[in-house]
Image (cartoon, rainbow, N blue to C red):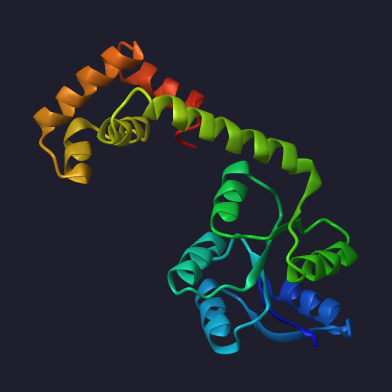
Length: 213
């Protein structure tokens, strides 16, 4: 039985090239090609493909947004992310959302075909040059989370993330539905527990532990 495929890329020329590439393969059937995230979601809902080849950067609804929505709707094609360049945070998030393959657009076309077949067979495919960096980031993030959750309460961890994201006390309170005074109390406790003296030092700590991008 042929591998049922949906293609998504916001560049018509790239999309046409992808379709031509896969239509040469007897064991692969292209069901639809999509130019944006909304079209991609509709195509997956309609066709229920085996594999979705998805450009990570698309207007309005990007590749990661598509993945989040598919997960929410419990639509589970095997997904290959297609990208011009890899950023570790995007790959980490993609893997968290269930991506099975990541391919650079600069790679030889036969490798993309090979990736689709392997992903369809239940295997994973991650572009080799980025694998070590991505795994290092995942491991450092997990270690950082373990370390900080052993010291701080879940609420304090939430405050740390928001401080590191640049939010002021009032904004943090609004996000967490607590008073500005309570935010200040949390910060005093956090500074004491982590042995940091101010927000800048706390932000550096959060970045070092890979708690934020």
